[in-house]
Length: 282
Ligand SMILES: Nc1ncnc2c1ncn2[C@@H]1O[C@H](COP(=O)(O)OP(=O)(O)O)[C@@H](O)[C@H]1O
Ligand SMILES: CC(=O)N[C@@H](CCC(=O)OP(=O)(O)O)C(=O)O
Image (cartoon, rainbow, N blue to C red; front, side, top):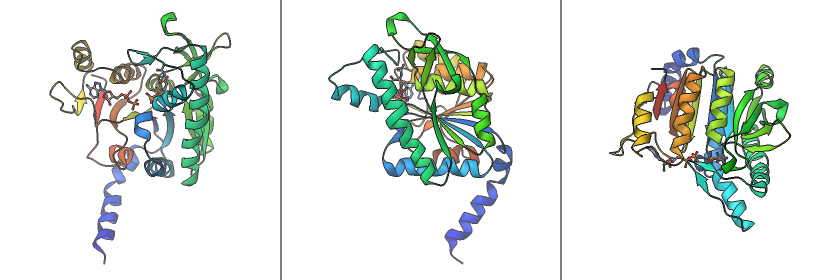
């Protein structure tokens, strides 16, 4: 018999304890703009998510799309600046952010999942009042901080075998639209659902120390120290902040990992190998 088939059967068999552990688990996956990559990479990601659903996991995808927003702002001749990983968002920018995230990016992911045989439905924080926000800081404009989560809609979707794909747009209490950092939104949704896992997919293999080595496990104290020293910087700041908030909010564990690695989520969930940097309650 072909050796590859024997190896495939052995791999499937060794996954049994993990399949049992994650049966009916809620796993929130944040797909960052930098991790989205080519159509082939998107297809492979979508396939992994459909497989998760097939084996009894309830996956929720929350996406970013920073590079896609930048590209559209460039086309419009508009500039934007970031403060601690958050985009300063004026009226024009928030309109572009909503169009790009809820439109182009969200539907690309929805379609990719559905092409693999899944049932994905796209929504944003506005739908069913999923994520109601307050303004983060007047200096940042229309940037929102999640203040009230209404995740019942997501449980209703799970019950119908539907994979929710969520754009990080928040509903304001006075009809405003808020731009929410994708990691922040994913953390708030994971906490609202008391998810078993929050996987933050990005373009590095995990959180690196000053020597550039990936730390396989991180404590809150280490994150605080590394941020003060500037070792954790830029886009990694909202990710590690999110991880700590999510754990405080009742998420069992958070993993920051490279979404561009082949089958990254399957490797993390269903093998003993694991991947990236794990953060859990200390
Ligand atoms: N200590 C660190 N370890 C790993 N990456 C870091 C660290 N500090 C800053 N970064 C940067 O954070 C980036 C990930 O954040 P970001 O670009 O916002 O990703 P995404 O678009 O996937 O959300 C990495 O590509 C890296 O340049
Ligand atoms: C407030 C804020 O910064 N919002 C982000 C939303 C998109 C995002 O988070 O995209 P990534 O995950 O690809 O970085 C932005 O405007 O870029």
